[in-house]
Amino acid sequence: MSDREQIKPTAHELMEMHVEALFTHDRNMRLRTINEPWPGEPPAPRFFLGRTIEGSALCRFRYDVPETLARLLEELCADEPNVKDFQTKPKHFEAYMNLLQSERFTMGPCYLIPDATVPTMEVVSVTRENMTELLRGSFEWLISEIDYAQPCIALVREGRAVSICRSVRITSRAHEAGLETLDEFRGRGYAAEVVAGWAMAVRQIEGIPLYSTLCDNFSSQSVARKSGLSYYGVNFTIT
Image 1 (cartoon, one colour):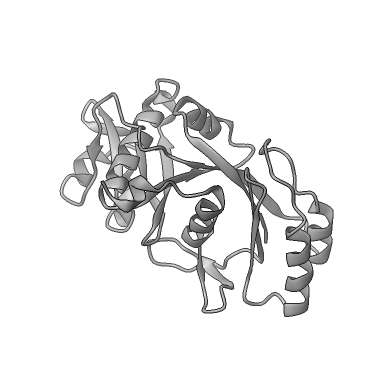
Image 2 (cartoon, rainbow, N blue to C red):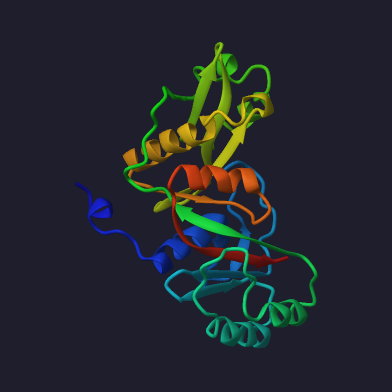
């Protein structure tokens, strides 16, 4: 049994893994870019706040946010209460938006995929060797990313992938899931199966499988609920 299996991370530790997977950081822990595994470096948001179910909050700022502004934001973050309902905006939402002079934000729940989560249907790994056959029809756009977004797990029907879960943010400690299911195959439980298969594959390479989504993505939240994922907090960003 590995150390990662013996010691379950706290909600705060999971939130740290989450933000480190989402964004690249400089030596001062300032945000630089979105941490996509494939080529390209879109800029990170100016502000990240992670509120946890334990009552702790974690905040990060992009490298170009002035130090005085960052300190003001940090003081407000320290006053954030624990979060239960992921639809609840931060306590200091208006202040964050005003200080950063922005009207654009994102927010959504964050989950850990438990060790006990395993697929009950057959799923397969999508690699360079089998991608042409499995991704034909609707997932051809994944071909250019296949070497980067690993593990990549699919549920196959009639010889082609109809639901896929792959690593879309990767660090040495954790992977974040990216989930896609063809419209005509939704509502059959396939998404939960590939999420479970992907989590197994991530654990096999000593990674921690994380899953996050947005507050208005009800289908993704449904997958998390049906899969029994472990909710640990809410992320909030301002661009």
